[in-house]
Length: 456
Ligand code: TYD
Ligand code: MG
Image (cartoon, rainbow, N blue to C red; front, top):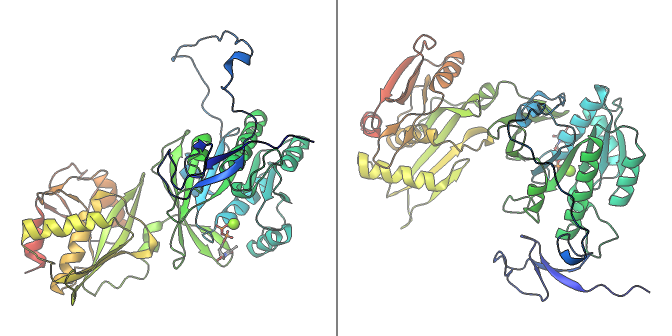
């Protein structure tokens, strides 16, 4: 009989190991994250004395030639855009997102597109039975795609199946938290299991030149569940986000070893699956009520793509001693800063008012250039006068109230004129290509100019 393994307590958040249970992880300070796991074989690197003697490596210089990472198109243009031109064989991609956001739908559509293009695509579902996946395929109209499907959670079986394949171009595993190996005496979803499963799949992908796509669950605060650890192990990390009340879904890259991380992909969840949205601005401005006060159109940028979106504000008299401030789709501390600047630099006080700010369509804006549009929406709601419906706004506001230049000003203006806007309110500083811009521009230097016009 095997000797019972000595157990260790592993933090599910940072992966720290302790010999005793503790309420608070000594490594990262998180509470209630220590879980008992049987310790597996000692991690490589310990017991150096027993290790085989190393072999001398050939050292290289940095200016050697390496071929550009070969890629293949996924067949979904928005996904290609986010990954920087397609997926790279031999790489691992992790996609995170809240339950029900559409990860499985996206990956099934992707697998089908890749399979239809003549590549070998394998889909391992650990969460749903094969019949459920088939049902979804039916709904998406993809039953004819030659995707190889299996419902399995045992990593050994998955690796054996993959090993028997002559060719594997794309391997989808939904999700990494459901996989387990009987070599470890820990429950599926624990750090050791997830790490072991990810490692062995990555090893397979690297040695066989397959592109590996993993689904990762997210915790309630939006991190990929359990360890940050798997984010370090993979080459690319994408987040699939969006508001479940809205049909729009944004695919955002947070880590990419093969490309930039500032591009987003926009999809719309429809009755027959995810539809790619080539022109997001039209979608985000779709059902706009331009006549009511408190709405301003922001000419924003996501990566290299301009996106116009409506920012809505509501300023209402507050019965409370401490008025409410609520934000959806923007940073709450950014709103607090903007209100302070409006009060201190422009003499417009919101101290007696509840303030609500919302970015229409479920988009999350991270750009500081949204400040001016948010300020315009706030001032418009404050005064009860609607803004001109054919105006767009952008510009970052500093603590002094000065309006600072934004990036890609010409691109923003061109998108606005394409969609029929007539005038842009933008920072005084910063170059624009006058030849390419036909809409009227109003350049402002200080927020005061806007406040005097809108709040008087
Ligand atoms: P799913 O891909 O299962 O999400 P996840 O894997 O991220 O948990 O998709 C979940 C939601 O998407 C589901 O609630 C229904 C919706 N949906 C559609 O609206 N249209 C469709 O064609 C499909 C397949 C799903
Ligand atoms: Mg799913």
